[in-house]
Length: 336
Image (cartoon, rainbow, N blue to C red; front, side, top):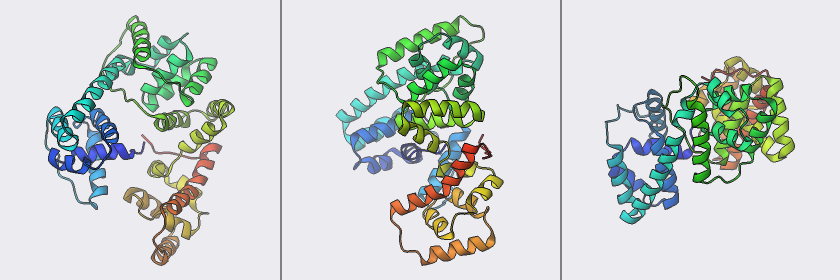
């Protein structure tokens, strides 16, 4: 799944010393700083996947300069120093207080997220669709997909609709939901209790739902998509589009990519590749003919500096045939 702007900012800040990070944050709105700080909380600097993402982000921001191994640092000290220098002591204390509350909520779902798929299905049996939706939103897309498939049809449809049209849920309600499901899991054997739950916003929720649905059998996926669309047409279209995005291009099998973009004009490809991530650009260029590469390069050399909207529109045009192939069930992925 492609990193959001806030996630990239969080990873980049963790690659810097606290003083430099604070300088970068000085002109940013305090609420945005709080959101970025929340992303930093979710990062485990010891995870191998983080190290790969960190190298990629640093390379992106610093023109492919090779990143050295990040030094070990104190997360608590980093936060305190960075936030105080950027926002002042009073505002920093408010943000740290908010982070502590969110961290406590994250702890509520540790045991739930680490439970096996079968245990989760049993624990969610007979629960209200809102409860199921809350639990699914805390799982990874892969595990959420596994659970979704095994739920009974009515519960599955209602839960997905709840996720696409979420109602505001307070900490007390989430605490109660986590407690109910945890107790049911504790009555089952083999329950473990280690994982990270990540709170998300509406656009991230829809992306997670899209990833869950994208790996299902076509018939089941289409049934759930139709249910979402019947409930809210705009949300249904958004979920369909989020199943395949520009950032997903590196995860698409070469043959599928070749078949889908061969009808895209050289001018559109040149526009779409303007300022593109190196990995995406290389993936596309390696899956078009040498003649098309030359045409794209020629178009790029003649092109004036494009507007951001023009680039985004061109990327949508490149992605559209990929979405159509996905809807037909012919798109092949190499996503982990």
